[in-house]
Each structure stands twice: as structure tokens, then as C-alpha cells.
Length: 266
Image (tube, rainbow, N blue to C red; front, side, top):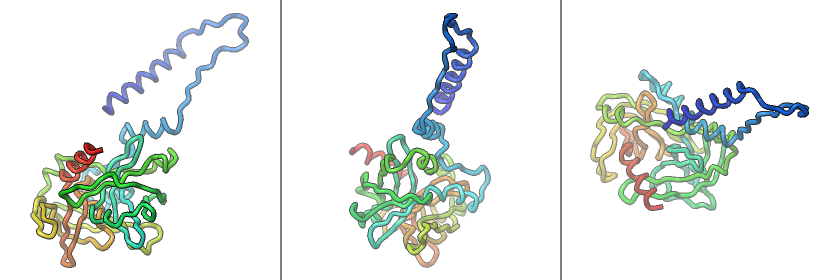
């Protein structure tokens, strides 16, 4: 789709060039030649960048958790719910809204009157629950694009995923977890911890389902944050951790399935 869209742009520009190259037939009494005017709005610019994938977080060509984190940190949001808070991941941006994935247990504290989303770019916005999974620890928030102006929207980023890379991951591969920082950090600084894969499909009794079992660290407030491979691909969502350096993340395929199911219920 991106190539087709790009070809259309090239075609339009080519047509404009040809139009300028052709002789203009102007009556002798006309004092001025007609002007060709092209109006591009801020909405056009935003939607063009979105269509071309410029708002998707970039991925690396070589493994480096630190550099990959720098690419994805602008996809992590803090979800404020009165005296409670958690994390979320900008999952998708459309011309109409922003979809954030988080844990269902995080959204159990959600009250629209006192809850809001804090973006890493410094924006605070209202949101509403799009839906939650009946089987998994997954929920989605949606933010209307009208909460922003178009220049602000251009600064937002959503996560990238690659199913081939995901399916190739195995025990020992590097990963990292990131989520909202401590509630006392007014600037919304996030947390970043490197680790490795223990098992990509491990049954965890506490959650009653198969999850990504990792060796690493996550702290309070990081529930709903992202788990990424060392290239910056989104592979899952943090649901829990132990003090002994173990993490549990909802796998990407489960998140994708839950999103499609919830969309089908709208």
C-alpha cells in the first residue's frame, strides 16, 4: 500500500510538472497569467506521514538494546487513575484516533472522571476504554485525535512488530522491558531494563496462560509496558515480575488476536 501511495504522489507531481511545461493560452487583453495554487493543510501532512509509516518507531539492523530503547521510548505512555498508575504502549495510530494497549488489571482502576493518559512528549489527554479481553490480561484505550493539533500528532510514535522476527526468537535471545517511571517523576521518565528470553511460550500458573517468560526486571508501575527484542520490535506486554529477576509478558500474537476480537465487537 505504501508503494502504491508513493506512486500516486509521484504521478501527481509529474502531472503538475507537465502542466507547468505546457504553454498557457491566455487572451491578449489578460493583464496577468493564471496562477497554479496548491494548498496543503497540516492535516494533509500528518496523514501523509502516517500513510508512509513515518510515525512508526524505527528498528535497528543490528542487535543493541540500548539503541533500540531510544527508538521505542516515545511509544510508552503513563496511565493515571487517581492514586494509581500504570503503563501503556501506543499500539496503533489512525487518521481518527490513537490506540493504546495495556493490561486489563491496570484498567480495573480506570474512572473516566479522574483518569487520563500522559504521553512522553509531554501531552496529557482524556481517553476511553475501547475494550478488554475476556481471556487475557489485555485492554485497550483509545484517544481521539481531536485531543491534539496536527503538529502534535506528528510527534507521536507507535510500535513496530515483525512476526518473522518474533517466531525466530528463542531462549537466550536479548530483550528489554520498558514502562512508566516512578509516580513522583513529574516529567514522566520511563524505566528500562535489559534481560533475556527464558521461554517464548511458558505456562505461568499465576496468570493461567502461556506467556513470554523472561530473565530481567520490572518494577511497580511498569504493568502494561512493552517488551521488545534487541532490534526494537514489539514482542509483548509486561504483566508481572518477581523480585528474583523473572518477568511475564503477554505475547504479541495474543495481543493482535485480542485487538481484532475487540474491534469486531464495536
